[in-house]
Image (cartoon, rainbow, N blue to C red; front, side, top):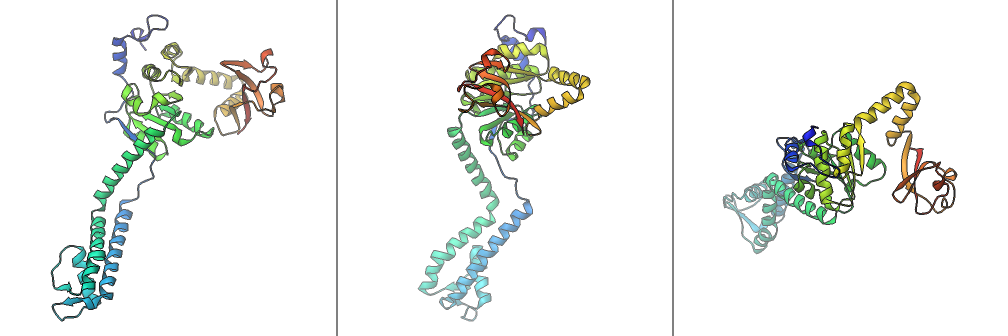
Length: 363
């Protein structure tokens, strides 16, 4: 990040010119157009879809043939006057295909009534099966629009993850491992193929530039409880954080940044927590060099669902009034209000019912 891109004083955000320069360099894709995708099932192979339609069409043809043959006394064949099974199949074929040569015709009132109430609906079903691809596309679009509208009306207190690269995917995996419902996670990414993969993973995806207000509004960020900012560039992280904080003043914003010198910009932009990926990796490397076992333990703690996990949870009634050392789990810190107390501090000697504890426990 250049000097011109940094705020000129405490609490000041980048100027319009700097912001414009930054916004010209987002992690975007030329094919990116804003759209919302909901969780989907893997599409069936084309051959299976065609085979299924052929089986349905054949079933309708067989049913029509049986109906005509059972009521064959009410039909007349111009060639010999009688209708056998072959004539019934022939009549069903030309009728369902709307050809209608007129050589086999219903003559009785019952046969004509059957044609009105049964054969004609079967003809419509047969035609729908033949043009099923087009109708299926239209139906799926209508259904998707209805699902998106319903999702917008019901989504509340969710988590918006901006950027679905390595950092974003691991953040989502950790959230899912801690019990967050997939329906409460929304992914924002500019690449169409990434959003398609998001839908296959069972998550809601919004394709678009995360630095733009309209994209974040489509993700319903204004009603989100948590925001994870994890794009691939530090300047993009600053712009995303500024836009997110402008839309939502109360959400918890956690942002990732590559360089330490850009961390103050993220905090001034409104991030509650800033994680520096390069320095964190360097510290882990240094620890692993001096003590490989300590480095392995730290890596284990950072990998949720494997070995030992770091978990924040509320204090139970049985634990209130006791020391953190009396808890079943290993307590390393106590969260009291907005303060984080080390378990060795005198204020944390007695747990309160309104406290939360950060513990290490088996995965």
